[in-house]
Image 1 (cartoon, rainbow, N blue to C red):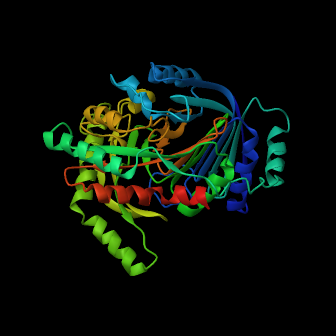
Image 2: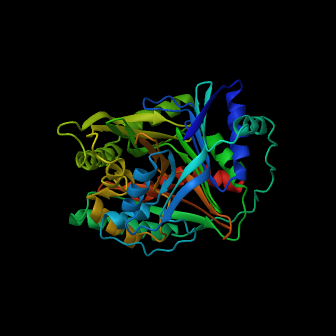
Image 3: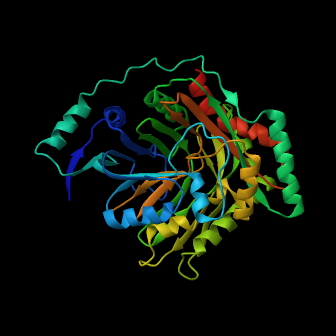
Length: 430
């Protein structure tokens, strides 16, 4: 049973900063922030869940079935993540590549304390509340001390798991698969990492979010493991019986010169290679959603629309469907996982080839962070444009990728990867 309290906010940006700083005392933290980005399917402007009442952590073996049992039993708010390697639970696949981070394949918790921000309204939901606990926490947030700064080292040495020439070779290998007809498209990713490195996770997240301001930002802390995400992409959302998926495929540079920036938008809109990437993934998402959709309900609401973010322009499509009230929310996710934008088409063949060519286990990267509501609704981002950190191992990592199609130029694909990596590298090296 939850106790609910409403509070009107004055300085919303300041309160959000203080709230996330206050949250650092807990071992289990999920912070989701839309950064006031104007989007159609927003439920909250920001959400904070902390302090686990119950939790589940598991590897991929029967991972979705365990999550289904947990969500069915709790019927409450659950926050956490799905790692990319849950693909091994969905299909007969494996993950044998190097893993420097060591995240569990799946992790969710039922928070004792929950903060939901919409406009100037703060909704606080507490489990097993003790007398003045809510007012005490509000007071503590208001007077929280700013986290100490200066613990990010500027001498971080970023290494490449795949070097440039090796990357070109792997793209050529992928193109051979495409020309043979094994696949039409696949997303190949590469890891940048630093060893024996300590960072301040909160400060790093604030810097990354500050220069990106994406609609699906997330700060996740699970004991000594952190995901600091500036994601522009929604994986999947459930609102009642309505399902929304918004895959991103197609990236364009930003330019400080307004005229040049407009040209980049026009070029991206008219780029046949980028459009074909996006349309192939839209077909894949339509197929995935049809597995649980009511007959005839799968619709493409937007096709290849260009959206502008602080770091890049992105081509986004919106695919929707309707499901029966009897369909379990976890089954909807399982039938669409992993997201098409980070795999390829056909999906299973693409994932097998990806596993062979990539040098790092993806883990939480290209997985999803989000939540289930008590009614069974959910909302998950795609974990891209993210810095991942294992505090105990002193290991920092970020990965970037791009879709390879028959028209791909390895040099341009590598350049696109560097554009996507710019924000993370800037944050870590400056």
